Length: 125
Image 1 (cartoon, rainbow, N blue to C red):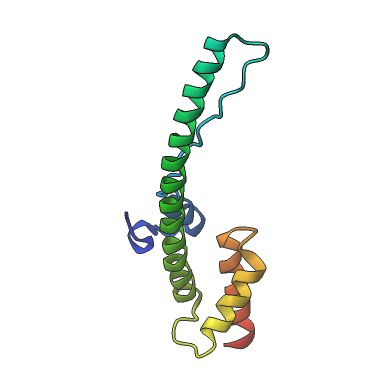
Image 2 (image 1 turned 90 degrees about the horizontal axis):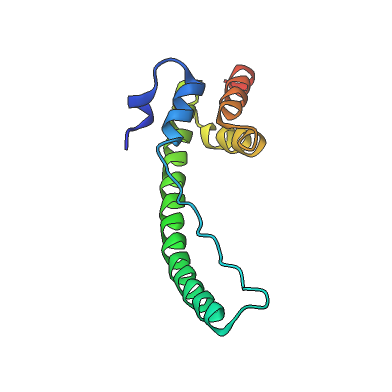
């Protein structure tokens, strides 16, 4: 995986998308449907499909958890990078400003977090 510094090309929005786009989440398996008014062989086939589905879900959950863990580590790296480029790097209140910006902006996107950090820096630094 590339770091955000390796990806950053001056366009922060595009760089964030490319950076976080490195994480690939698996596709969830589709649960088989029980046959309606089926024969015993239909239900036997359904039982096999259901067993395969359950096994696939175990693998899916493991892969999803690994992807989520990678995403969290990338988000941590991204937070540090946003603090650095917004000017807060060596400021004693950088963690507090980042927490405030993260709380108020990450649901709208990481670029919004950066905007809040820059605005706070203009007011307090």
